[in-house]
Length: 318
Image (cartoon, rainbow, N blue to C red; front, top):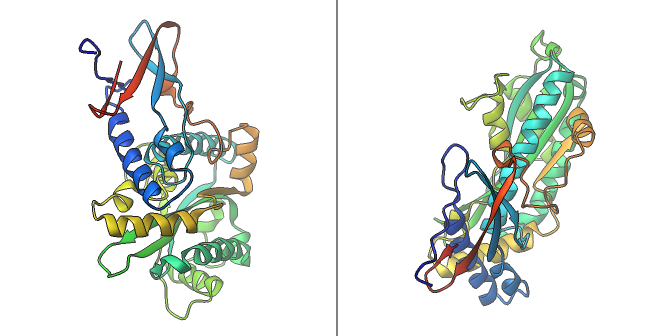
């Protein structure tokens, strides 16, 4: 046992992939599920227990085999899912720019007031219906080429009972004429009005819209930054694992109920068509081993590495 080494899995840029951190979070999440008497608790704790990598002669590694539980709140699965969604979305956006060179992008954030755990599921459904309605409004529909939307839920731990801030990120691909004339351009106040009307809200919601710069780089307001914001975690681990056990159990139970059967990310219009053209796999139910990243391409396999989780020493050992 003493000669076994701790797993260090680096990306091509040299960044260490956070297997240990995510697995520790996964086990804590599994423990909470057990306390809550969820049948899947045991299955969740077995997620990513044994990792098999392949390595090329340059020392680059790629995950080749493991077992993921696919539970919606699992920190290990969420990490892989967000990576895969971001890579897929980047490919779709690059293709969209090729197909419609004059198209422009907008990043829209739609919010509503915080809600309680018992109402979260119905409110998320209402948001999904409302955003579809917004896309049908005449001024939006005539300028819209396609979109990708995702939901995010953050937790307000300050209240006696936790409340939930559920909001939607929408990356819109619009015709170039959107920015020409008042008959096409939609102001922030108009977007706010559309969202208020579609959601049937008695208050004025906070809505933010900004043009996205077409350069695919990591700067704020860039296409890549917007893609990463849209494809990120639906719920962050730090919101469900705070070391306040009583509240964590409440939050996990609320979110398990509210998110069951829902989709985090969905496409429409041209972006949906391109997704089909590229034959991209469904991330929600698909393979989380291959995240379709260039970072993971291996030229020629020269050896295999097997890493196992050690429960006593709380790390992966090769």
